Length: 324
Image (cartoon, rainbow, N blue to C red):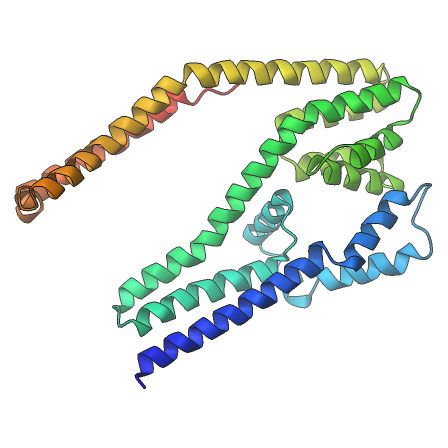
């Protein structure tokens, strides 16, 4: 049997094994019975601190998520930012496992390319692209989760304001948000409630919430709560004003999105039109444009055109990028 085919079969086998193991680890960290039991006990706790039967569970859970390699990696500032990205995206994977997936994915694609008798430089490029894909996926998941959190924030703020107006304290109002609203805002406010329930000051818990969820509106909410606890005032009225301001900003964002849709469509059309035209010409007359990339003047013309397109795309993007 050819050694290349044997190497491809070995890589495919390892990929299947790692995929099955990764799926099992993901299920164990997010949906297993032990995880659900811990979450139920956290939400049911009341008072000033954890109960005696909860303390061993919390200690074992922390020891499971932290390892020697993970602690060493978290000393690096760049990897600390990656850990924050994982938390913001709501991905239940440690930084060690995530980096392991990145390395194994890049090496697997590179080995498959070498087994298919591709050049070394091409295998390295394909492996680098494959290793970069998990970071692209993490960024996409994080942005999607933050947008969903931002859309749920007015309802959460209004619920807290109604609870305060009904006579509840601030921590039970956070617990109401964690129990009654859907994910992902329920888990974030649930973490803030657990921190306050374990004895963390409200100002520190709100600061941690604003750090975990980098949304301007949520930071306004955290700052309002901290200032009210230091200076006094009607917190329910303040939160009602914040919720109304957020909803008005959403309306303005919708109007801006409608008005800028024409510019975005023009940018897409002007960007794709040259490539679509070249593709159609090649389909109709395959040899018609061969002189364009076969002659040095044609190559210079292509480079100048691509540079002009990049400048034009950037200019149109800056025009339609309006912050509200």
